[in-house]
Image 1 (cartoon, helix red, strand yellow):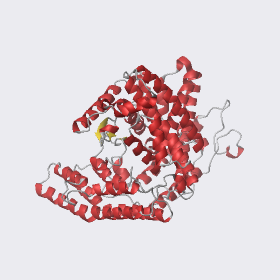
Image 2 (image 1 turned 120 degrees about the horizontal axis):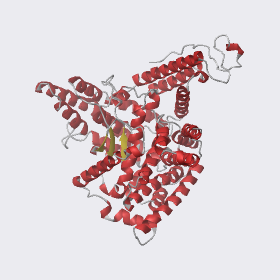
Image 3 (image 1 turned 60 degrees about the vertical axis):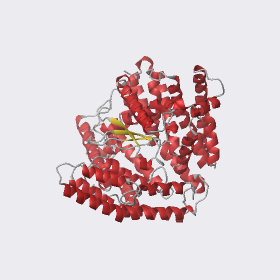
Image 4 (image 1 turned 90 degrees about the vertical axis):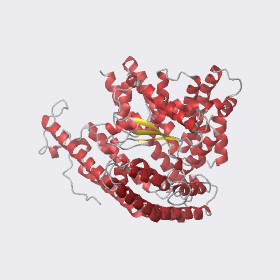
Length: 618
């Protein structure tokens, strides 16, 4: 579906000196205020652009049945997205046409303040997408941290609810489209390789392993049950008011789809990964790609929403690592540990008292304690926030089939209709990589007051276009979550010095990312150099460090957003506290930060500065 750009009304500029528009617009009042007629025009034009934003959002969502399901909508749930290169190019053409249409049909000067901000944010997002599309064949289609091979099964298992026979049929219909959907991604991956965009060699065995996990077990073979079969058969079995014969028929149809669509698709994937592996090298950074330097600079701009260079980011990272290590030495002294900071890191990595047992009991202990930490934080929210989310959140284990390649922890947003809570996922594959002393900071980052507060509040904001309540800028989102790790310290919640050290160890990990990401992709660091730097400067386990570095390699620039965003938030808060003195209210500051949804850091600075100015003037 393609929108048609129509000729808009004459663009008017609201100014007292514009003689040409005097006949069509009431004169400005003396003193610069608006007449009632002008106020009505502004209201009318603002409503018109907000209606336009809603139509564009609906147009975009209509093109993605999977987005509809992710948002809790039932429309199109029998289909998967069109993932072809043609569809990708069509989406970009739509973005360009919508940007041109907005600029042609609406005038900033005729909008209220909220609509002006929406205009700017839509423009920023469109320009960012257009810039990114220039290098769309540089972003790896498949990689071991995420990708259609693992995301698609996870999507069905976690987001496609089966509450009726029709829901089950729609699930089965989606299973039957696996070969088409994954085939479209394969076509794009083949095109990448032809252009010299090839993953580092170490990634391909991981891709093959995770793909084999999907088609391991019944109905594919006798090695247990495959995750997709377990999911759909259990969902069908749980249906009420349905005859046993119909359940049997639905399961038979699901099995057929798994064998005729899912299995062939993954066999083809595994063959392609093995073939591409023979072409791969051990070079890791974006510098190895065609126009690699320009591509990496574009990724840094996208993820940080700034114009900072790789060298500037690298320098900030080195300075932050040194600063945080000084704070760590204070805690090392507090717990009376004898030895260097590096000796203390080794102690934390190797003493078994800092991890739970690597068994089901230990995993459940982690889930239970993480839940308790979040519940305890919930009762403190009135001290920090005026606005709080209505949506609840839960703590959940990452599914075993994707443990080997999934993130250590992550958050999934709630459904728009409240049918699904926000979810803090923990990867419990190896408990030795989940130190107890980092539990608090991690729970605050992924849950409350971190991602759940920011994302759920954003989704629930009223009178904002949906592209704002559901959109995201990595530096803002991850910057907030990292900032949120430190906020509970102000309430005295980090009572255990080891948990406070965990907070610092989480922060230094993000600071070291600035060094590593730019080192790998701009300065040609090897994986071995990156591992050595992390082992020397952080307390994380070697396994965790290696997994993280492999993440930075396949996701250039993303890891820099966390610390860049946090530093901006901390700087804005410090400036506000200095200028407002006793008038500063932490709850109001947090409301200003969260009340407009996700925004680029430059816009966030404007919003905070405006709030400070208004507070100062009474």
